[in-house]
Image 1: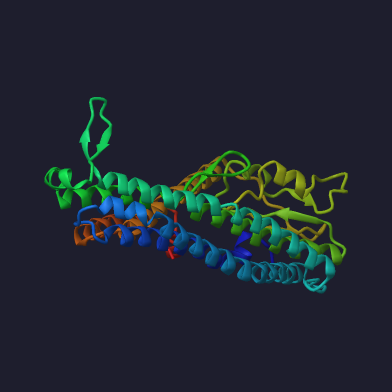
Image 2: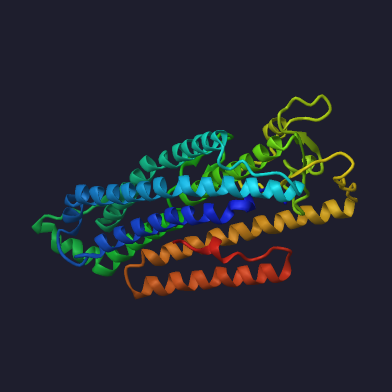
Length: 372
């Protein structure tokens, strides 16, 4: 049985869901806090005074998230490693998995530490984003004038100007201004995460990428360790059916686990060239001379069809992101009007997903549309 990211994908998603839920809770708490007393005088002053209290609340949320991940991740990666070892046993039809060897424990520990480092690096950005969204919403709610340059000027909330402020702004206008700011935050989420090759990610996407890579690496480590324990050093890269441009050249290639082969490139060489990138779905199978069947060369039509399927899947991922964004907007809705508008957006993008699946080669994965 070949091993891939999908071997332990369910383990990665279970932990990634914690980040989606944490982001949703953070947004809900911002909206709930700002909604309180929004019709009352001195609202902005009171909300700014509560800033440190809100900061402590978000820090506690981050601490809880870190503890949940630190508890669940080692078990998930250990399970992924074991699945990889068992897959190797099925792959070659003989041998024994090496899931409890010292080398396996060290491999899991190394991958755990690397994955936790990626995930823990998000904490500062989560806090900064939450505080920034809170302050921007308060500023939006206390703004009423536009100066000659087109920039908003905050109204004074002293007793003399308070009545003027309410007349100019109006309670509904303030609520709308705050809601608009929260909608922007819900739509974009916590962003600003950049990987080693310069690609930008949102919090959920970044956490999913890190966890997917961690569980994939653990499963592959268990698979390759078991193959080597049973005297095998070569694997073949299976066909994915919709390869990305970086991975396509490596489909059907034979690779050396140890890198000591004079005839074949190593797995490290292939992965340095792009194979096995985050969210890669390619798999490795044991290669045995005279036993393993090689893949036939693809026709131009097959290559074109697979490229189209790859694009269909990318389009589906974009729709899934839109659904999650709309659900986040629902989480920060401050009244029934905003809730109905957000619900309409959720339904609109869900209809897009149904239409896209019906007219393309993509399949719908409802777990990717969830925010918690």
